[in-house]
Length: 328
Image (cartoon, rainbow, N blue to C red):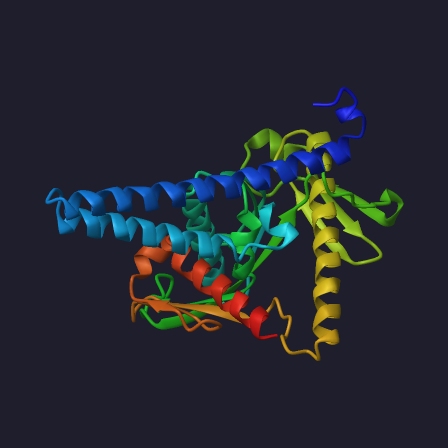
């Protein structure tokens, strides 16, 4: 490493990020090569009368799964895909039901993150009046988290026999999910704090009596864009302010990405509609069905999905999106 490498920290972070990306794909290639070599060795043994067809079939399936996994990873080809993500969930129509639905979705994403060994922080949480949460903001830290979760943007619809209705009626409720990329030191965002209104308030979520007695929570309103972010994670107002600044920069970065996507769609004749707020998925619990309305992928194992088993939906969306990009 050159002696002056860290004299320009932003450029250094960019270099380290590129190295990390290359290391990731080298590792994928190495794993593919190993799986291929294992299959070839077993085939040679089998031709000489050793081994079994079962062993060859198992090795072939391992290689096939790895190839499919690499093909899936290759769909994450945008610069922002490699970043961590902030996941924002808000209750929609449905009252108490919708707040309970937000809590169910929060648990689903927490379990998904745990299964993938991603770290999670709760940046903001507002309890519902009766049950559940009105809103939640989670930060999920790990490689390619934004790429995996970007397809979760939109309205999630729940249909079930209501546990809050004494007559046991079927009820529909909604929650909106927004996924934002978390910028790192390799990305420079010009933020003028003179354009930001800062409000302090008492935290309304979990955190203990001390949190609720002091105005440690921070709300930033970016006047030029109208973007609002809140952080009540920490008892320290200073640390909440730092986190809120990072959140706001991430929103501004995403806004710039969205402008680029819109411009590209306009140039291409609006072949692909860019829309983040449409209903994307229905969870019909009494019929035991979860269906993605964009890809038509569905499953009858609702418990698996609500316990964090999102991989089939994530893969179906990314492959569907990649196919649309190819067509365009």
